Each structure stands twice: as C-alpha cells, then as structure tokens.
Image 1 (tube, helix red, strand yellow):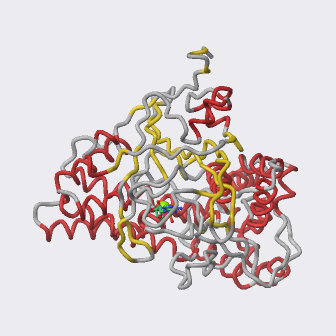
Image 2 (cartoon, helix red, strand yellow):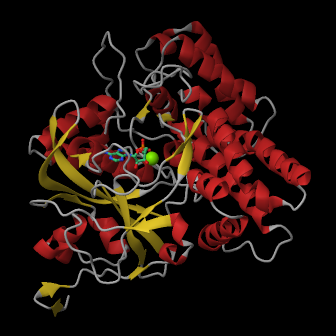
Image 3 (cartoon, rainbow, N blue to C red):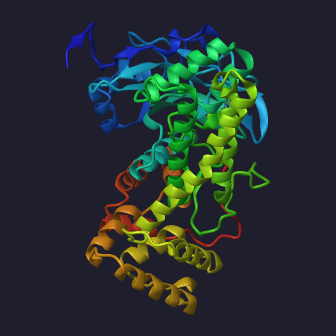
Amino acid sequence: MTPKNGSMVAGWNFDNSYARLPQSFFTLHEPTPVRSPKLVILNERLATSLGLNIEALQSEDGVAVLAGNRIPKGALPLAQAYAGHQFGHFTMLGDGRALLLGEQITPVGERVDIQLKGAGKTPYSRGGDGRAALGPMLREYIISEAMHGLGIPTTRSLAVVTTGESVFRETELPGAILTRVASSHLRVGTFEYVSNFCTPEELRSLADYALQRHFPDIGEVENRYLSLLREVIKRQAALIAKWQLVGFVHGVMNTDNMTISGEAIDYGPCAFMDTYDPATVFSSIDLQGRYAYGNQPHMAAWNLARFAEALLPILHDNPAEAVELAQEAVSDFAKQYHYYWLHGMRAKLGLFNEETEDLTLIKGLLNLMQKHRADYTNTFRALTFDETEDTALFRSQEFAQWREQWHNRLTRQSEPKSASHQFMRNNNPALIPRNHRVEEALEAAVNGDKSVMKKLLKALSNPFAHSPEQADYCTLPPKSSQPYRTYCGT
Ligand code: AMP
Ligand code: MG
C-alpha cells in the first residue's frame, strides 16, 4: 500500500467503455454528496478479488468514494437510460437513483460495473428522491451474497454506507448507498429503449457492445445478433432453473430487471419459499401472481420475447424473416429451461444417469410436498441425509412409497450410495436466507448491532457445507396467520 497525496491507494482501476457508446444511451451525472457517510459493511473477499485495498476502502477517503462524495481517478459517473415492461406495461425508466462509476478492471483482467445505488437524483428519477434506505440496501447485500453462495450468477454487493441523512418512505428511515458490482448493467430494457427511441445503427452498436462484453467467443458467425439472442435465452434458462431449484422468488421480473449477462439483478421484493407451493408470491403489489414462483419460467420467456422484439430491426433485412427467427429462438427457451431444471433436479435426488421415468419420480415428490405443505429446502436436506422428519409428509404412506421407488431408482446406477450422498450434499443447500432470519438480521443491523447479520452472512457464504453452525438456520418461522409480505417501496 503506497501513500499518495496523504491517502492510501484503494486500487480503483477504471475504464469507461459504456461512456464511449452513443450519447443517447446515458447521461453523465455526478452523485449528490451526502452529509456524513459511515461504512456499515464491506465485502472484504470481493474487494480483494477486484484488486481493491481493504484498509484504503475503510479510510475516510475510501468511504467518501462509496458514498459518492469523492469521485475516484478514472471514474466517469453516468446514469444509464433504459425502458422496460413493468407488470406487462411499457415504460421509460433509466437509473433513477443509481449511477455507474465506471468499469473496474480486476487484477485478472475482468471488467465489472461499479454502481452506486441510492446516490441521488438523476434525469431519470421521475418523482423519486434518488435515495435508498439502509434496511433494503442491507437486504440486497444479504440476498445477493446468499445467491452467490448458492452458486447462482448474480450481481454482487461490495459495500453499504449510511449517509447521515434520512429518507422518507412510509416513515423516516436512515439513508444508505449500496455499491453494486455487476458483469454489466445491460438489461432487456436497455435494448427496448434503444430499439424504440434510437436508430438501428445505435441498436447495432449496443448489440455489438453486449456481444463483446458477454459473449466474446461468438466470432464472425453468419448472424451475430441471432447468436446474441440465442445465448441470452440460454443463460436466462440456466438462471431461472437455478432459481426454481432453490425456491427463489424474484418478485419483480420486469424486463428492466432482466440482464443480458444472465446474472440475477435487483433484489427488491424477492424472498425464498419455505413451504413448497408453485403459487407462492411475496410481493404486496403482485396481486395477480404474475411473478409467482411457478410462473417464473413462463415470465422469463415472455421477457425474452420482448428482447427478441427489440432486436427485430437488426435480426434480418426482411421483417417477416426477422420475426420468424425471433419466434424460433424464443420458443427454444422452454426446452432449454426444462433441460437445466431436470438436470438440477436429478442432482438434488442424487441421480447420475438418466431414465425417462425420472420426471414422473420428481413430479411425484413435488406433488406430495405441495399436498402435505412440506418445507422445500428441509425436505431435500432430509433426503440428502436419508433422515426422517416429524412432518405430515414424512408420516404419510404415499411418501413412504415414493421413497421406496426413489431408493430403487438409486440402485439402477453404477455409482455407490456414498457418491449419491455427496452429489446431493453439493446440490441441496443446508440453508437459505429464510425470511424471518433476514428480517431479524436487518432489524438488529438497523439498530446498530451488525453481529446477527455477519453471522448469517457467514453461514450463507457456503450453504453446502452442512456444518453444525448451519443447523440453527434450518428451523422454520413460527406459524403465523399472515403470509410473509415484501414491499417495493425501497
Ligand atoms: P426497481 O423497481 O428498483 O427496478 O426500479 C424501477 C425504476 O424506478 C428504476 O428506473 C429506478 O431507477 C426507479 N427508482 C426506484 N426507486 C427510486 C427512487 N427512490 N428515486 C428515483 N428513482 C427510483
Ligand atoms: Mg430495477
């Protein structure tokens, strides 16, 4: 660590390739300074992997950067323009409270976006205050890091700082800023914006940028933009399958919250399902269940159809042929999703080889889980250790029969039982960020005690460890007459 101008060098190493794209894609805009920034949490492992110096980030100058009070050398803050279909309706959006500082080039040469969320009003703020509250920013920190621990592609959280200022939602809350790290912030909504409001030439430049940034292996193929569409569909199919396999409900799968990189983004009203039920909805505003757990694959396909539509002007010179190519690619989503999901479900049941009847076996289990209101995560964990739980599911005769079928199925593969057990351990998490434990951690943290959150984060960092400390997080919430609800007013 070399002192420079009286301060330590944090290791910021920015480039700004997004700022070199057409000007209509963004607005250069500086963060609005905050009164008295204080570091609440820093993701030290992530910081190190980004080539950042922990001590320097924790210093006054370092925290000033994380609060938007100081722009590090090389950064070029901007708000990105995008549109999106929100609950089915097309709207112009854009970064209303987030600013891209630039792209950090990591020690291994990777390029990641560094974004400050809650950094003040932008030209896209509409009626919003451009700010964020501490609870929701810590919630995003916990859930995104939990997703990463679960092996799910996701944006990451580098830090949360409080601003020393209040934000007003239903009540007065402490203001905060999250530093979000992402492969990029290109969204389906970015393409919708450019396709609707910019020229085909500009659309081509956005598509070329996305290809270069996320799919550099697609070389000089016949139709690069069709390849882009196909690859995004594939990554999203893999992502949504992973959500379903752990019981994650995103809650607000609008097209502005779907990335081109295939990372999960925007942890607003999301939550993990306890009791297995495809109709599970947590978000208070999702009254129709549009984004219910069981509907997520369908909604992903709907969003990807919007992506395909946005690409139409550059898919083919002949509009009818462009539509045909788009439809063919989008209709492939269901097949791809099913492939990833089935593959993942086999792993959860310790199955190495494939039999056509596997789908019936899997569906049989899920139906019984739904009927007996079984806990999704704990059921798979019990199966992993071949334990019997004192629950309606495990007491039922139908489940005993199912279990026997499953045991028989396990014998029809060459791998020994021990290998199946290990396979299941690696695919069935010991814990998920259960809603009551996340709430408990947030409440303590907002009131100044970060220890509960830190302990939870540690347990979530390796959910496949199945360590004794993790057992504490497997207990279910106390029975409540009200279902768990999440709110968008973040
Ligand atoms: P989200 O629901 O987080 O995906 O946000 C949808 C849109 O609302 C995005 O354009 C955000 O930038 C914008 N937005 C959300 N909260 C605020 C806020 N407090 N101030 C300004 N814009 C906001
Ligand atoms: Mg969003």
